[in-house]
Image (tube, rainbow, N blue to C red; front, top):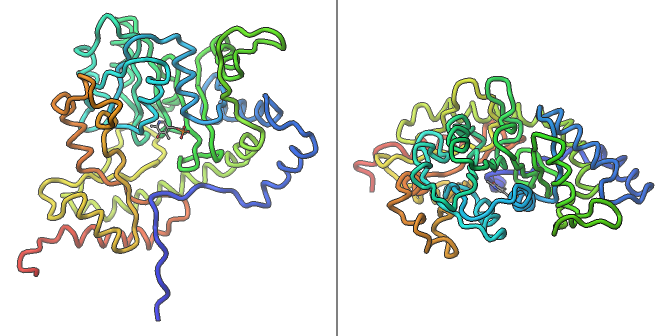
Length: 379
Ligand SMILES: *Cc1c(COP(=O)(O)O)cnc(C)c1O
């Protein structure tokens, strides 16, 4: 009898061999320095900035706190232009700052905020733009930067998907006024939970460092109503160890993505991601977009995969603008967000993670290919 197949999920967290983590834990136990800018925290800030090719970076307990704090650090007020095609944390960070999200439609090719639609959404209350490098594919940072400059707006990039992504040999994380990262377990690089703000200068980093530690500038001085956003030593030390394995993890992702593309090029009714020229991508996600002329709908295809024990995910469906706390906004009306609605209705993210076997990818692609075969005459 065949042994039952294990379920395949969209992602599986990256973990180093446990024995490699033990020396880090021993050091934490010996020093009893558990948090508040310990040795591992300081070392990880340095090592990550070097690895990512950015000037300054401030570690956080998670990406959401990094987003909330980035908006505080730049004293953003009023309205912020953002994308509905993202994880809810992007817009939630605005509500937690008392800011009003203004949704703008996305570009059908990049699935990122459409620069051509930004200007018409600007009002006297607009103070910032919060785009997302969706799936790790870079935004049109040049156009967004030009618009921001001419209207005096700040730009904060949500780069939760874009760890390590480069364009023309330069980090994508160095764009805008601030950029945030997430090191959540499900992301390309993780510290179980974690995040960071990438910032261009040391002065702003100092302000961010105060803000993530209750606003303390020194033992007795509080300069702002800060929050507790600090990364602890356990997470920071794991982060240092994960960095030793990240290049191998990225290479594994690349090979898996290439295998998917090899198969899916023969299934034109399932569109795949196009990676722009000059971009060194991180293969963070493997979305497919089910075309209307595919014999199965997205949801039917999802069910077909589930029947085979393959658990894909609808990233991002529903759109953020459809959730109850956003639905009433003028900018959330579906006819303002036609492209985003179309993509959200057709997307399915396939399993991709280091350790996913290529013969499993072959098996997933067989299910996808069979779903494309015209079912005329079938019962
Ligand atoms: C994961 C994610 C976040 C939130 O990060 P956490 O570390 O889980 O708080 C924010 N934005 C996007 C686009 C994400 O995918």
